[in-house]
Image (cartoon, rainbow, N blue to C red; front, side, top):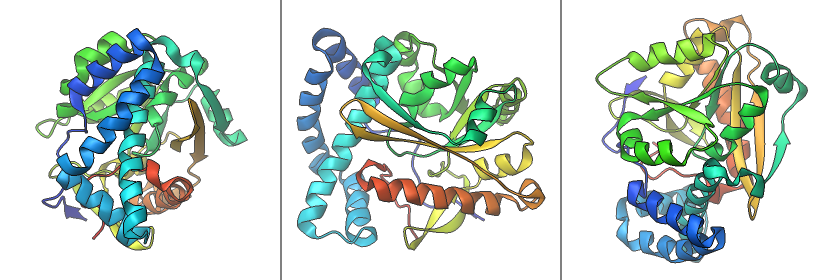
Length: 298
């Protein structure tokens, strides 16, 4: 286990509040189509003007996926474009346009049983596809979804989330480097029968990490979500949402099925390995929908 390295994600996502506001305006005034048209130009802008992010997307395409230079140029554009589509779609869904989307569900019977029951659950996702667009789905089971988010990122877009989240699809548990309050909020939410969603594929500033082989090469994963999963008695579910077409998503749920050792000290390694296996399957199916704009691999 190591501390985060100098290239850790800094708690800020691409676009920020200004990007949200522009797309919210276009969606409300002109519809989703207009937002996608603007996005086609914005995606081009980010290639030269976000050099650090572009560097690591290029590395991902060339050295992990082994794409040619020409294919990697196309991949750069698609990666930024798909990230923008995720931003637009989650904004539209949370602001009341959820019915305009088509959702397919890949949820085995064991997951359905948990989601229909009374217990809470820890849900570990990834910066893949558009996991947030599925948050309103959990409402049909009468559950409350809490999303764990870096405090700096949350403060940057809080006013917009509060205003546009008309469905009340989820609340946010902010994580601060200076406080451990989020740990207690997470435990309270799960013990109260709610779902807590965390991301398992991004390091936090100064956070501890573990190493695991991902897509054929060693990579850094955050320690926190997997330690928490090993310490809770509640179900642990891996969750991904991949876009399969225009306004069409598939939700993938996989229940972690560990033995007693995975719920004891040191069990975080077992849970991480299971998570990485599921994340690999998802990413291989749509590599241009995985978003990590920093040094992820060793």
